[in-house]
Amino acid sequence: MEDYQTIIKEMLGQHFSPIGNGEATSYSTPGILRMVRGVIPESPITENDIFSILTEMGFQKDLHPIYEQNEAGEKTEKIISYIFLWRFYRVGKF
Image (cartoon, rainbow, N blue to C red; front, side, top):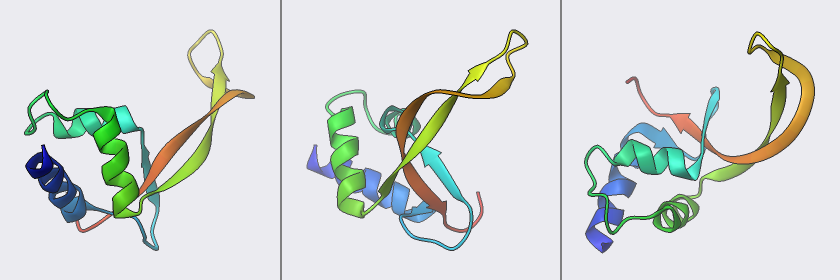
């Protein structure tokens, strides 16, 4: 499993940084796990491993609002909840 964690750190480090000057992109822990599933086997990596990797790499957590949607599925201005997401800055182009 240690090898998989190293591979995930290398993959993320090639494309993302925990610090940057540009616009940040946000991902959830399960979202990052889905992202690496293309090359990492389903087992033994879990969301707990992804959390540890992102924390160790220094990625920050931001609080994001979740907005109510109207009948047309459009976002309204009413906040119904909040979610913490990881902040990523892109490195290079992809």
